[in-house]
Amino acid sequence: MEMVVKGVLENVRSCPRSFEWDYLKEWLMKVARGESQKAKRIRHLFAAAIYCIWSERNARIFQASAEPSGSLVRKILQMG
Image 1 (cartoon, helix red, strand yellow):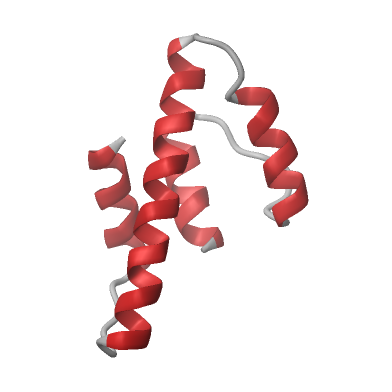
Image 2 (cartoon, rainbow, N blue to C red):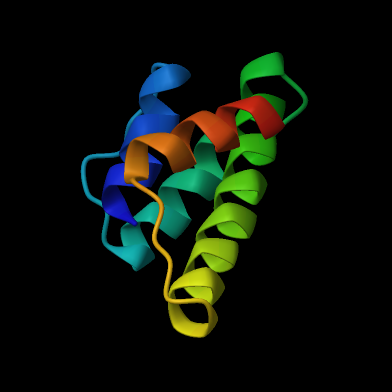
């Protein structure tokens, strides 16, 4: 998950210091607040990342298939 989130956030030139869930959650609440274009983009990308990571998790568990992290990043960026 960390590689996917890093890949997505590098695209918006914004990256947290840590990828621990609690820190990431606090960081996201700060940078995604407001109505600026950057805040909106980060919110959209984060929602797309959660959706794609969950879909990938289900594919790995129920279909025994895996997609490379780079492919997931591209998919998320297209969605966001």
